Amino acid sequence: MEATSGTEELVSGELVSVAHALSLPAESYSNDPDIEMAWAMRAMQHAEVYYKLISSVDPQFLKLTRVDDQIYSEFRENFEKLRIDVLDPEELKSESAKEKWRPFCLKFDGIVEDFNYGTLLRLDCSQGYTEENTIFAPRIQFFAIEIARNREGYNKAVYTSVQDKEEEKGADNGGEKGSDSVEEKEKEANKEISESGETAM
Image 1 (cartoon, rainbow, N blue to C red):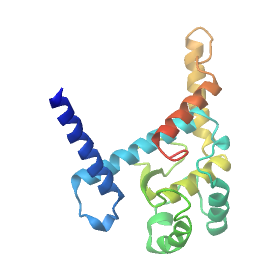
Image 2 (cartoon, rainbow, N blue to C red):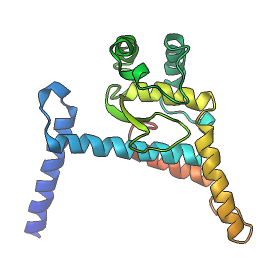
Image 3 (cartoon, rainbow, N blue to C red):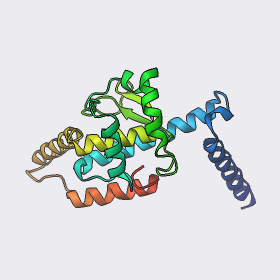
């Protein structure tokens, strides 16, 4: 029993240490592989939950934060002509793009939790998270683009594709549609979201 308690304390101590390290500004540490792995794991978990969500629930009805309306209106006011169905990395990462994005992102400091936390963003919204289709972006940039994709109907392609596959699977199993109702999927997705962090992410 004492050995287990000691192990639990060690694991708990390591978790506190990793959590503390992740809360520090990026300048506080140099390319520590353990920290990079923790960041990457959290970003991947976030991506998996989000993709499962837009696959299970019609994205136009999703609310990702408490301030979706503000994010969307500020985004479209500042990036009216930005093409969001298939992103050009230069529109996000070039020096001129960063100059335009920086003030937008900073507006949400203190409004959106972890607004500048590293997050994975899909370049082509009709595709999933693959190495070729993914770029690293601050969380507020992810929210701005994904809220716009949801509201403007671009993420519907993912939802429709998954629903079509489930219908085909149901037809192969005697004509029944998938066993889960839309309401059950939505409840399950919302549960996963609430377990993974602030409202949606």
